[in-house]
Image (cartoon, rainbow, N blue to C red; front, side, top):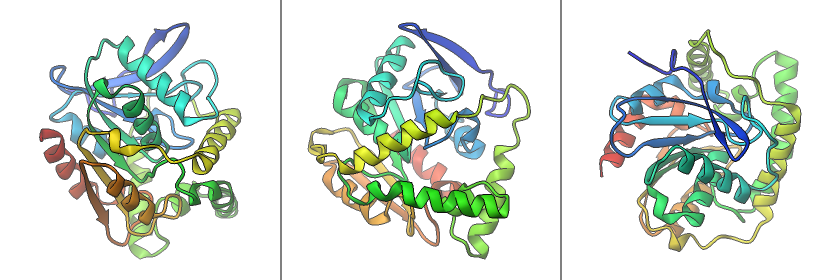
Amino acid sequence: MTTWKNAPTQILDVDGVSFAYRELGPPSGVPVVFLHHFTAVLDDWDPRVIDGIAEQHHVIAFDNRGVGATGSSVPTDVEQMGTDAIAFIRALGCEKVDLFGFSLGGAVAQMVALQAPDLVRRMVLAGTGSRGGGGIAKMPFIVGGAYLKAFLTRKDARHFLFFPRNAGGKKAANEYFERLAERTGDRDLPISLRARVAQLRAITSGGLHAPDDLSVITAPVLVANGDDDLMVSSAHSAAMAARLPNATLKIYPNSGHGGVFQYHHEFVPATLKFLAG
């Protein structure tokens, strides 16, 4: 049986750009397209979340333009990232999809819904907020501090960015990284420094951008976050949910940016229920 541990990496040419992607789960029904976070490549998706959703849905995860094994260069604005995602989805032949956007991927998912509302059936927006949310512009300082701590402690920066630094958070972080290491073959290419910088510029400019009119997004949306997110304020996620006309908000206790991974045992069933309508 295909799982995230052994799903083969495939390549799809879209207008001269080679997109790397993986898919699994039943091939019928509306696909769930995963859009990942700042600095992430395919191997940074939590297998428990991917496999859990794929038990009931056709799941597609891909590296957007300039990320990992996908060609070209990363755009410096989330709007173009959304345009690229739409091009990839349509090139797959999909007429309707559900979107799962985490962090930066959640911002991209909103751009997809705003640019191609006919394409989106439902959305899950985790650890994310909307453009023009203010605090997002402080991201370079938050990320810089976490990378310094990571260098001094020889840890991945996500130990400090995704999980609280208490006993429960440290345990969740260790378990998360153990899951990420389960795939040992056909690994994705790491993200380049150039791509990281471009993504950071896109995030920063998004924080300073005029707010989008989210009232036009009529698709049902599940908004999820931890209760103490250092990267995207939990209050920012709640404010975004309030602006979406058909949104449900779920905040997980004693958790941060990676709350949906820390609470995957609860989050996956809740997401399956939401996607089932």
